[in-house]
Image (cartoon, rainbow, N blue to C red):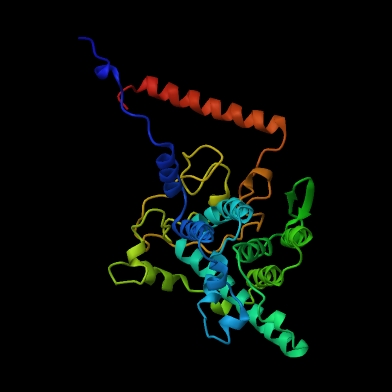
Length: 342
């Protein structure tokens, strides 16, 4: 009796499971935790209001002493449009920045900007409430990932040379003022929001060294990541996507088609996060400052490239580079033919 059972191959992979595995593999740990928290917050909004429980609202944060709101406010997403732009923005900036700095330093940067922005928001709200006696300042809320993401963009752009530019749609904007243009665009479509202004201001202050006293030393981070000495982050080192100081790729994270030091990576997106290694094996990079160009925008000449890199601009230069590469390949093939045992 004929049967087709032997001709059947393995079942096709589940596209949802495949997409999730790719997301876990290609997204660094802290960025993934932040995006997962935003996603959970969005779906939780169908049952209750996460903003009421987690947003930085002066009436609850100060008068009811719910200080945890200072940290949890960026992890709130209230609508599908905010969720889309949160993923699009943070996947573009957060992935490469975390691969460049390492997960520990990126987490320190993220929470430093979060706490500084929210503390300023509380101070200004209380002052305005005292001056105007209007309770509206006590119920104003600071929430959403863009409060911190605008600060992160301002940190990087504040270190840019004055002559560099970044493209926004059809405009070329000086990189130093790019966060201000983004802020103006947000204010035009969503109305002025005090937390966004404070986020950009804190980002500029951090980038210009005004918050250096809150930066963590590299030696301290190494101790946090050292499992043998019981570091507080030792349990995270072996988790998928954790980028130790020894694995941080510095400015190379912004090279086109590379998510780190893996020169064999190809394609337009970041390379998969490498396996954990000993954090004390090599020196840790500082925050990417070579050129200070736009975050994740290496393909347009505004991205963070190493200082010695020269990108061919003309057709003749590209043709010369290709000819030299072909000549090197011919030489290698000739050497292999002369010495087949190699």
